[in-house]
Image (cartoon, rainbow, N blue to C red):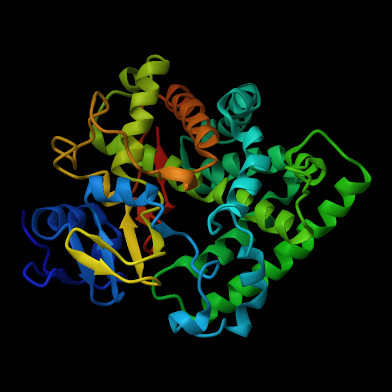
Length: 414
């Protein structure tokens, strides 16, 4: 496996030098992941000052390993760990994140997830099939006659945010504003974020939180049949969610409930069109559709990295970690492990190999996975059936960020 010229690997020291802002990397990270698998699957990323794992078995086991967690301050103080005090200029962002399902460990995580989980089980989201199909058809009606479309703004952006807003109980007309808040909010997770990114995320967190509080007050006064009402009025072992927990949970569900799925709709359409495969064969029935969606999730996952704190001293793959060390797991690279997947960089929907790790694993397995899968399984076949002859009109434009992987533009014609 050739090493790209912008990637430097020292296999003996297991050190890797790579600029995450290099367009050659973020536009095609899979080539880099293939080189890492060949030369250095566990490595210290010099620029990030952290150890990274790409091997399928390591990533899969570490996601489930209770010696690692999403938070550390529940068992140790900042002084003990030598961590700086939180930045005051992102206080509202930190407050919004404090009770995020993505960031908590048991028992708080268990309580919150139990209260929310019922809405996301497969049998519940299956009921959304008709309105999902109706929305996809209605959007296509709006551009079918044009014989061309920028798919993200006209289709992919709209479907997930509309569905998650309806599910939670947020007015659908808030969709464009929710997208703006979400885009600004998640820039806090990017490698190399700037002060401008942080200030934008802080403003978004404050406005987002203030808005959610007004909806919570409305639901307390006038309960409805939606997830927010359910979270407000349901107890777990005698406890109800606090205001801050409700705000954090609603924000994380809105963000996670659409951001990754928008990326995945675009990524999937692109990879199917570039593969040269016949869409009528890829989507001829439910089984082939599910395999096609699974393979697109494996090959172009929308979220590439999850981080974990070492909660105790532990050794993994010959690397010793002390309590308070951070490690990163590259889910998208694990999906390309050649020991698990034959010809891993090739789109092969008829695979019968390992399960992809794009939704994570363990107690933090993506709670919205059934909804995301449903959205992809419904809207992709409709899109390709309604627009026979669909093709790329221009080279897709990849978002200039890592480690969320998606497109800025996907111009199509038929």
